Image (tube, rainbow, N blue to C red; front, side, top):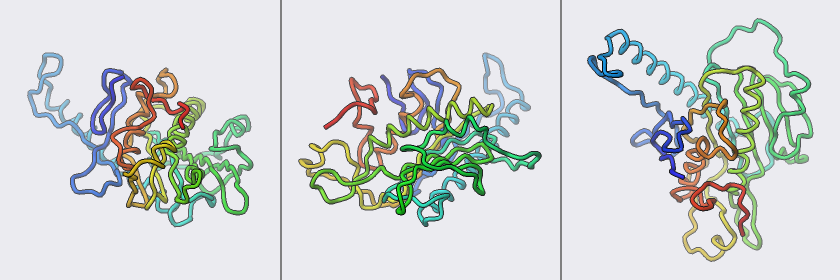
Length: 302
């Protein structure tokens, strides 16, 4: 299977997804995204015919609107990471590392006038996916929150449904210790698996709410400073080149996706660019969890 590069469009797998962001030159490797719109000049051919100035102007305006939208998404995601880092998320989290997976419909960040009471249908409440098992749920200031409680120390995971249509999935049990190794490691494969589960749930949620149009997804990791990513026990124990992250927060570029696609799980054409970017902050070129060069997040490892 051909891979999608971290700065390009989908390759021969033809899944129709693209990175809608690229790293700014000189920006810290937080992965905050900046849109890149295609600029063309008058006379550029379209289907063998020269495009009019009006059409060129329209395309330029569309690029400007996309750029504005991506800046809003960038700002919103950075704020969510900051709240979590300072312990001000929707509910306390138990783990040292928390992974956030965001699903952001393109129209969700537009200012909306409240015209009717917002609620989650009863049948949908029991279907919300949460990392680990749901133990409680409630309405809150931002919408509806489902939580997998972990005792007095905080939760193992939560899913926040925003009134705007955004969904935030949190997994706070993606780090820990392995065997007799005392240091805390980040469970990269577990995060990969959670990304698949969350995206699968988001597809169903967007279908049930009737959300249409482009949708953006992104991964955020909070609390990763001075930690290494776990691959296999053998590699961790016998490797002399452990790679430790320096920044405490990682915010990936956004990926533009089509949630109505009939792509099969684990949705490699859609999610693989996001996964590979996560592993790059750990020092790898791409995910180490592959089988015959195909992404295999559920492959058993030792």
